[in-house]
Length: 381
Ligand SMILES: Cc1ncc(COP(=O)(O)O)c(C=O)c1O
Image (cartoon, rainbow, N blue to C red; front, side):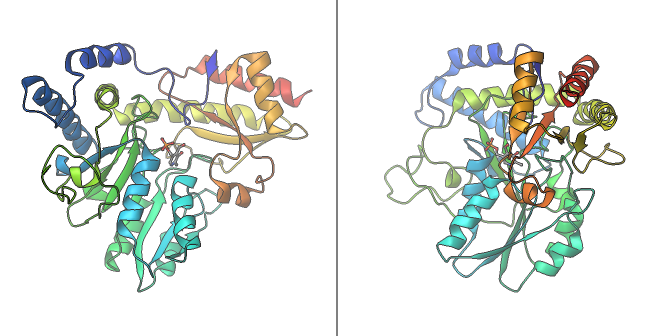
């Protein structure tokens, strides 16, 4: 089987990491942060080691400000609900995923906030000027995806954050698609908080992700419960990371994330990115020669993209393309509207969606060539 659905989740994971995480869990699988016995303390230390790795990976100075959660969606809910107040205005982009748009829609629908979304150009880029022009005196934050999960464009976040900082507005970054594929240095980029998910290009398991909060930004607690600390108090622990973590952590997930990060750091983000960008270019160039295939917003140099590409075949419904790729060619892709409805509206694909190919660290040239050949066959039907 050729797996080209890595933007949904990377598969397979790095060799040996799942086995090693299960081994570690077999050794340490107690409740971290709860209990004074040796094993509980070793489990806590293992979790803190992964916090330190995550902070270093994203250029954040304080590992205590890495709060684990279930995934990027969870982290985005934590940061959005923990920052906005009634009467606030929020800016996002039309490239954003439902994990940003739906919390904003919910808050707006209940009358708490209003929000605006900046559009993107032919290259799939949001202009810093457009964001700047949307800022108002009551803009509480800009929340935006770093890389589009539909067209793969990587946004000029540092410049956007520079403009926002001049207006006193923090930028919250959704790094679900970029983390592990694009180097990220929050301090250098001027980003105030970042949501990540473990199971995509960080090569961890599903069910683990988190929020990195930079010094200077304070996120209010919105979920309350046991933290293993201050247990005599009815008030939730106010210090990071427990301020944003309620209940027992996904220890197996944290351990797996740590091993996934080791793989990514060992390979090098730049090296992974360069390999995938070359394969993406090969895919785009191959598909460009197939009559009847339209590729969306992928002209020119793709060196600055993450490895996703959306396309359609004239006269064949994307669901059928996906079914034929799967059934006849054993190629797994995602089809439909990829949880980013505003992108599809702007591409004119909201009704049927698109076929999305997404590459990973284990994708080969032969995989890409097989995908092009399969699309040629489908377009010729
Ligand atoms: C851009 C973007 N943001 C957020 C998410 C949500 O990630 P998760 O489902 O792991 O929470 C995704 C998942 O596809 C995504 O592509």
